[in-house]
Structures are given as C-alpha cells and as structure tokens.
Length: 483
Ligand SMILES: [Zn+2]
Ligand SMILES: [Zn+2]
Image (cartoon, rainbow, N blue to C red):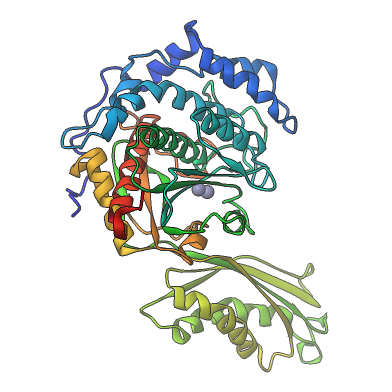
C-alpha cells in the first residue's frame, strides 16, 4: 500500500549543511582524489569529442567528495522504518558513495549522444569486471549486458539507459559537460550510476553466497532517438530467460528520498505523422480552376483531430497535435504543395495499434472532394510503458524496504515516451520514478532543460531501492530461483 499524504516534500529534514556548500568545498579543497584521477585518465578512451583542458581540470577537481560528509553518509543508511540490506551491504554502499558520485560526475562531464556511448560503456565494463563480474559489450560497443549469480532458471533484469541529449549544458557547476552540444539533461547519467552501484552490491552478495537467483544488468544505448536502443539489447539476448524487468527514471518534481510508483500506464505511446498534399496551383482569383491546397490543409489540420474523437473508443483516448505546417509563399498564389506534421499520443495499447490505420483513413475522408492528393507517412515511435501490476507491487515492496513507507508515493502519468516499453511488450515489468529534487532548493528544472541537475543523494536512494526490488523480485519467482 502506498503512504501518500499529498505532499511528498512534507516532513523532509534538510541537511545541516547545504549540498552546494559541499560541492563548493569539493571544488576548492585539495582532497586526495584518486578516484577522480582514475576517471580522469580513463576519459581519454573516447577521442571523438573534444575536451577543453581548463574545463577538464574543473571537472576532475570536483570528482570526489569528503568522506563522512552528510551528502556521502546520509542516503546510504536505512531511513527510519526501512529494512537493512543483507550482508552489511548498507555499509558497503556508504563506503562506495564517493566513488558513485564521482562516477556520475564523470559521466555527466563526458556525455555521449545516442548510439555513441562508447566511453560510458567502457567505464561500466571496467567497474563491473573489477568487481569480479563478466560484463559483455554490445556488438557496437555502446551498451553492456552483465549477469550476476550463476543460478539457472528465470532471471530478473534491471535496465538503465546511457545516452545524453543534443543540448549545450547551461549549468555553472564544476562537473558540467565538457562537450558542446551534448548534455545529460534527462538524468541518464544517474540511471547508469544507480544500476552500476546496484550491480556492485549484488556482486558482493553473490560472492558471499547470499544471492538466491540470477540478476541481469542491461545498460542500453540510445533511449532518446528513434530507432532506439532497447531492440538492440533484445537482439543481443538481453531478455533471454528474463521473468521480470525493472527500471527507473529521474523525477525532478519528487524530492530525493522518495520514489513514485504506478500500476498501468506510466508514459504514453508516441508516433509521428506527416501529411504532404499536392495539387494544381494557380491564382487565388480562380480557385475553381485549381486545387485550393491551403483550404485542404486547413481541413486536415482541424477535422482529422476532431474526427479522431469520434472514431476512437473514448475510454482510450488518443491525441493528435500538429506541430508544424507549411504551404505557399505569396498571398495571391495557391501553392502546388504543402505539408503538416504532428505527434500522436495515447496511453492505450489498443488505440496505439489502431492509430496507424485510422489516421490515414481520416485524412483521405476529409480530403474527399478537395482534389488534393495526399501522401500520409505514419512513423511508429515508442509504445506506452504499461506497468505490470505484480511488478509494481514488487517495486512497492522493495522501495518500502529501502526508504520506509513514507518514501513511496503515487507517480503521475506522463505523456512523454520511454523505450523501456519495448521490453514490456515481451516480459512483465515496471518502471518507477526516482525523486531527484533538491529539497533545499526552490529551483525545479524539468527533464530536457539544459540546466537540469539532480540532488546526488538520490543515487544512494536509487541503489537501495533497485537492490531491494531485485531481491524482492527474486523472492517472488516460483521456486525462488534455483541455486
Ligand atoms: Zn529524455
Ligand atoms: Zn530519459
């Protein structure tokens, strides 16, 4: 059950010292930054993106945090009402937090665009191999698959995405992007770091003989583009023997220390549609001798979305919103061609399947009698993320153990899209929202904002939730994961 009092920020205890102070201290003090230097040396793996040396120094000097600071220690200790992880994994997490924050900052400072996550994937492989695991790179070297535990039988998969957005980082922080035109503005650096941290804890658990079953880490490329990276992971065998799959996404509107969960639709299916019209152009004085293309485009723009509400089941609504339109150049000339483009969004799997037939039909219907010729191009994007009921219950169990019941709140539906849906078409699973908002700050920058940043305490919370969720999912498997 969810404990939600309507205000996820209520009862939040701010740190004695603000996180910005710690960042500033980390930036100016001369700490022994072996972790940072290790990452710094490895940053040369990718030659494809120029790194400015002055900015690189700033980044490197911020890649570690003072041991024992509130930032480092607080998220790794179980909050009141939470359940400790087995085999002293909480203590291990506390010790690893400086490394994890440094890793997140390195990834943030060295973003890689969709499909080109070579250095990020190489970093993950090194860290997992150093923990005694056997990670394997995707054929293109831009993603990683890694099993933990040697049990046969069903597998629980945990997924993160690696790619950055084609934006220029607008933040003034020491770990800001060193690559112009690339920025981790969707928090995938956090997703990657949380999954890495979870993998390290589970590797320790397996080494201690305490992992009853097998967990698979999926680090996928290219979540932000179409075509996206999830099908690459699936083609590489990422879902073989998988009985359930789990993922998270940063949620800046929830405070660090909380997660949002939801059964059913979490994100929308999103497709794109383009209607190109053509006809005989001519003088606006004689529309009867031409095809009035602007008039025809107007019909498509107004009537197709309106008629959709009468062709689709209103219990599963589908939205068509045009984003760009163009026709003509002169006020007294009827153009010979024009186009309109838009996006189609729905939370319903059935509506999504119907849309690609219904919309072209409606375009033809509304153009009847105008004389305009239509070329309709309907492009499939991502299906909706529809969280499985049982998998959501497993996340709720894991998150309650990790954060206490007050750390678990209902998640809102987003009409954005997520290619995690491709996995959910094949195996049951669920995605949750990881609160990354800084409760000490009034600034709330949304995902995809060039100034987007997170409260890094969310990394420790995310690791705890993911680890507890994986263990709860293994426990729920029939036969409890044959050893
Ligand atoms: Zn995004
Ligand atoms: Zn994202």
